[in-house]
Length: 339
Image (cartoon, rainbow, N blue to C red; front, side, top):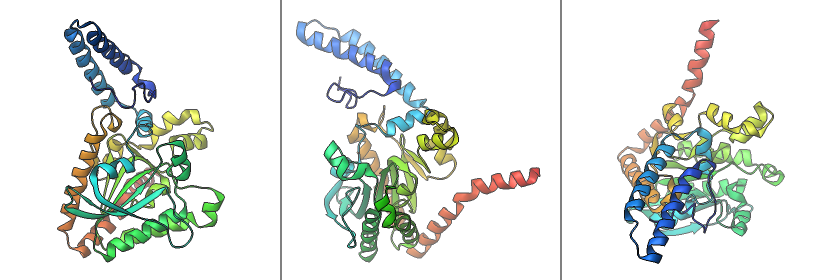
């Protein structure tokens, strides 16, 4: 049995709700090791344990709570944008700097090809970092204004060369520190949203992990917005919401449920257009399959958008984002009717 990437001894990380699953995996590994050591066949026992393991894994991940999905989205072994770039983007040529202040490593931008090299794209992505040094260098994926200005520079290049834009969103939010505020992080996000709304080239946005607040929106306005099955998309983190409403972060599970931040809930509210399926047990268990699913969706969607005349595409994009308030409006109308 192939060792699960996130729960093997080499990682040591265990999600709180996976104790029984990991116990079964360890039993299977013990039987496999004993079989290899003694030469005695334990195939019947291994086969039965594997069937139980798969059944339990499927049942668990089909019934995750909103808070458990947040935990999966934050899993240390979950594929990041750099993993997807390595697997599905060919000839990636990165661009650096906003030509004003600095090069923000929390946002990666560059030219590349996707879909066996057939589709030329401009890729924008949040980068959280893999090891401690990398995470500190890119501020754990929380971008400064120069990161969003670099992204805008890249989008303008895409428009100039008639390349579609693909964005991979994975951030807890934009960095709210003093320097970031002094250099205009709110303005840079707002400007990106405005410019993406009228950029004359197709835009596909995918939330691959965390989709946090304005940090996500800074590269999140597009013709199609998709989300990975076990990612989340939210105006604030569950902990932040809980600390405001209940004065304690311990209420984060209740906040996650109330905010409707999961892929299924967001699809029902028409905040996202599509859900990209993940491998059994999450993308961290099989990054290659997750990357294949992502690539298939992006290529298919780009080809659909390419058939739409650009003025019509911009009209549809505008209408899509104008519809975002309809749930709230219906609630207000119902409240006014009761009065």
